[in-house]
Length: 225
Image (cartoon, rainbow, N blue to C red; front, top):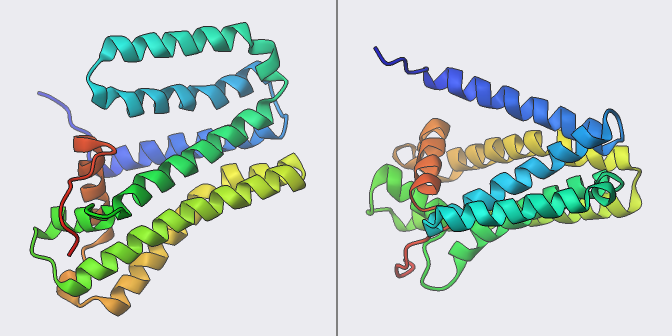
């Protein structure tokens, strides 16, 4: 019999991994612990992101070759990397936020369907009301702005504040800030949309997973309503 873990268990395991990584990143950015391990924790997500970005090309040999080249570069410049661990975490945080801003923002271009509108269509079908289309477009704009602003705040803190202050914001507060953004959007949704046009948070997350898994970074070219 094939065992299938319940969704809540998968979510809990993913949450634990995220919390452990955030704590490790915070300690590494602050210079606590083994410097080689701290650098490795900073670099592994970069490799993972590279694979996720390039995998839709459906050329696994090319992806593995690029990852291999990058690992050789890391090995050759390891001494320089471990002497700038905080900078590695900053670049990781900045790159992630800019990538997410691009992921949301590029769907706002002309003849594109805003990402949140795509999620709504996955849940409710293609027949969205004009109010829902307008609302989901503004939510896409809000998420794009969120990632841009957080990247700017991260940069200002990294330049002007002590490393531990920047690390607290970047590594420990990013998760709660994203959760607050989800909660705030849900409360706004409750005020502006009628009950039959308000999907649950669970449905929204499920639709987002389906969108990113089926065509990560892709966006159907459709006329904007």
